[in-house]
Amino acid sequence: MGMTRRMALVLSAALLVALLAPPVLAAVLEVGSSGSDVTAVQKKLIQWGYLTGSADGKYGEKTREAVRAFQRRNGLAVDGRVGPATAAAMGLTLSGGGSGKGGGSVAASATIISADHRLLSRLVYAEARGESYKGQVAVAAVVLNRVASASFPNTISGVIYQTGAFSCVGNGSINNTPNSAAIRAALDALNGWDPTGGCLYYYNPKATNDKWIRTRTVKTVIGNHSFAV
Image 1: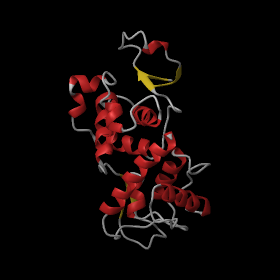
Image 2: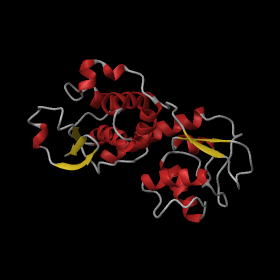
Image 3: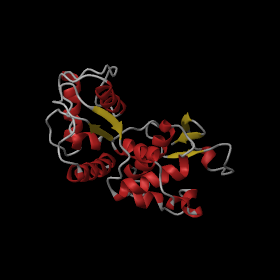
Image 4: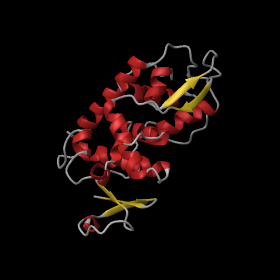
């Protein structure tokens, strides 16, 4: 049930990306492409568990199969090539010309692709903008882990606006405009990166007097936040 909920969120976001993607005028990465653009794609695939090994910047058969798996899971055309729609679903933007064998350039994209993505980005910005990028992804992942858990509401908005769940809702900072890092971190979490390993709670031990949260089992510490179950 938990995986079904998370998959639904990812599929919804990916379908919106495909509909909003620009005309295919940008570079396309495929077998034979190489360089820093391919490395950026491989790093994403490794983070999300689609690819093993290192990001060597060479688009070979392993990378193509990893891309196909990502496309299949996200409701995209399964061709093993990274064009604009697939890149956008990864949170990347392809630019420049070329046949695709040499590639163009890849930059991190900070495009909001859905209402859920927007709300999650705002939560990340409000709760973790002073943390490392990994720490921001981790905060977003906790929200998604709660969505997947039968112990919490089964929507992103339900989890975030659950009474007393997040201080940023009470103080109004949830309404602030997120920056590009928060937007990208939220998308990385939506695409499956969970630096917490399934944690449902996080807190800053230096900033909270909540005795109950300290009873939870801490699994990892990222920056100022302890992540627990």
